[in-house]
Image 1 (cartoon, rainbow, N blue to C red):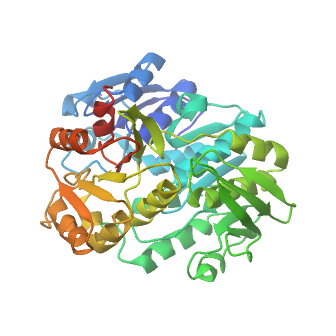
Image 2 (tube, rainbow, N blue to C red):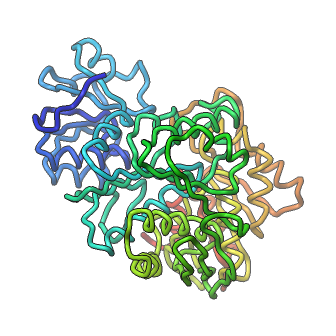
Length: 458
């Protein structure tokens, strides 16, 4: 594999530079005096930010963008072998590297790299840890899968031993990493276009856990099924967190305020703490326990960590309040897996409202087909459901699945469900049917956020 010499900056081209992770890696290399260029299908605030930092960004992916002076091309799983830039890279004999391999090589430049993995909760937990480190004045380098308000983006360039990043299991990308502390939040079925079954996924997380060195630490959810199969062969100690009272870190006496924000008593080997959060839902209790466990392992002050968590209000698109119109509160959430949907809608139950509306945009055809009934069950926690067309992302509809298939499952559960093929139709329906004190959640990993923003006149 090509090895980057970080003491000899070269010209690196990012194919898909506008992605949340790719843009962050490009910025890290820019900070180390690398020449950076790249392409994306459309301009965005992320591409504009990189251009302001000195990167050359092409809109549209064309073979002409790939020139002989480029030393390395970085790509993601979304780039296919028939991509014109991929073909041009091959023809010119330019070295290639996956996004995950680049991230792994960057991690090796830090004494305490931290990797947060799991089917759900990575961005929120990474953000929580980021807030703890920032509050402790540790000057960390951060790579987050969402926009964190306190750093004004998804990336922060620091100068200390701390490097914090999300670790995604899709295409086994996290197996290219070199963590010192790893967190596994949960292990569930997802990305079934890549994995064969849950055992295949569990094996992938087991391999990830085994990347840790003997002086490393694994922080893992004690509720994970067949936990011992993941931890049995690791070379380092591990600690657990959860809600049963049997874990190393566990919560009791959980209460919620009028906006579904939890407060709980944390029990741990380091003592007890009263933890109050400004992000909603039971799932954020477990996320915060993992973050506090990290702080303890890193030797950070517990009281400071708890206080910093109390000031964390979330990242963009994670139960994010967008505004109010006509007495209707509009929330946006990135949930796109049945477990995430259930967690978000359960949190919403504790939020003040008359009628709970959920406007859901399924994400990818393979995921929709794999979890069709699970999606229906989870969405049925809302009072009224509106479905948009499936967001294709990297896929083509070769399996003949549509949102109408999901609607049939929801109808069979006796829930009020509607489908509209365009955002305009969805918005018009909501304007006519939502009323004072209703709670409206736009939900999905695609562009469904535009519905709420349009209603608010943004």
